[in-house]
Length: 277
Image (cartoon, rainbow, N blue to C red):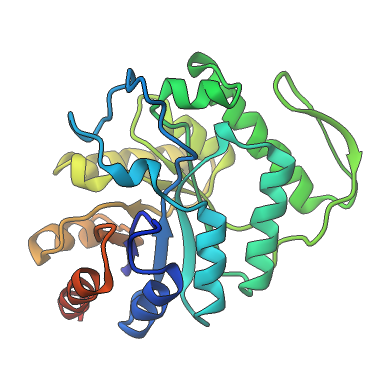
């Protein structure tokens, strides 16, 4: 099982390049950053994590900027969005950013995606909450066309464009792994149709995660696909939590660190590194 670290990269936390070097030198496989362009001041949409929304949700860097800094400071570390809010992004521009980051990093990008929870935030970007999954699906399918075709075009309900040229293509072929976040009743439908892996927030799921992984792999087999890689997010950093994940076939476990300075974050990385060794 591989191990990674996730942090909201913010202007008041340890810099993304310093964090990336620290994560890589301690033997972790990957670094992940989330995304929110902003948080509407109305605060009408409830945060799934609890009553009080942490301030890093509206202080975070753009994930592709942060991960580009991380790419430039490392040589082996894989670089992931956890998650990228595709429903708030233009698909042609996002396809360009993904391909560019994958190319300059030498094929190290992992494209974690999701539909999001903040209805007002996505509505500011022109996506209605009720249509977010249909929008996400078409944008992902359109990006796949851009990454894999010399002359890409797409005709959908939410995404439409005539033939275009767009380079660079991603280094990873046919494209970086697309990992679907979430744990809803139709999540596995999306994973199996147009994604390469599943990325649940394991810290909120408890022991039921193993049963869901079994269900996913059974559905994958029935659909004629091989085993689906699972990335467990926000895992509790202790062996009692890690061993069941490994037994369930989880590919990687991701530990969280706070959006804080190096004096707080680096000792946590040291403790996690000791745990995984």
